[in-house]
Image 1: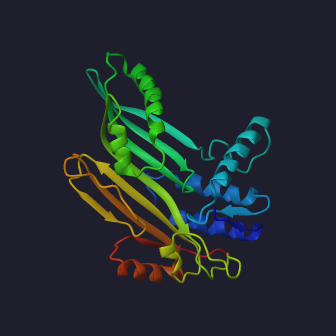
Image 2: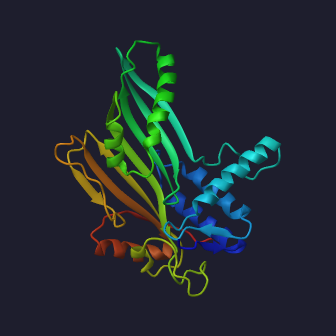
Image 3: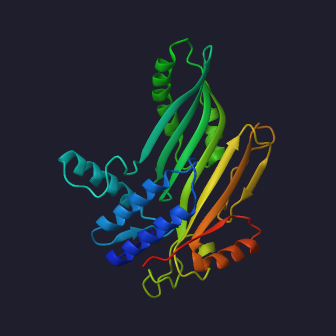
Length: 293
């Protein structure tokens, strides 16, 4: 197992400030985890880390245990009535599910389902937004149906782990009584700290995907990926340099897939990132964020 990068207090504070600005610059919509909560969670992780903030070598974001530590500590402080830098309600949970009834026609109900989750395997955070329909088997009030569906969907959604949108679509469609119309997955990360970044110790190999670490950057790079699998899409389109493999549906599957990635870099680094994407044939958007201090 590759050892994580450990950032001391000063480096961790600077890293979290820059990453917060990168999150703001990415202009994440509601199909991604709430960026302000992600920013606050990361800031708390940096401020409260004893012995240094551990950064995952693959994602250039805190290791999974750092994400979870912040949540646990916030809940403990809340139970004890102790002062808190981060309110427990704003700390990111390992998994959070919301179910809303969209329509009810006879015994067929349509729902909008949202699942926010920490991907322990990749140390990234993701939001699944689904449109699904279920057949409860009897006609009940909308309120009762919504409550029953909430628990039923929570059990079925336990199947979601690290699947991309297409695989999640296929897995959920196999569930008895569940009709899937659309799955959207918005992922924050990975990022990158390339060799030579002032945050890294001399000679450190950096963090993030190998393809990114070859760039000459002066500050942290952060990306966000949006995937959509839907009955409304006819084929598969992928614009993501980090997509080593993407599950695309066959022509008989009845749904299509799209995937794209956008980037946030220090303002002086944006030309480098744009030029790199151009050489790869990617049209991904690159947003700049300002230096701190």
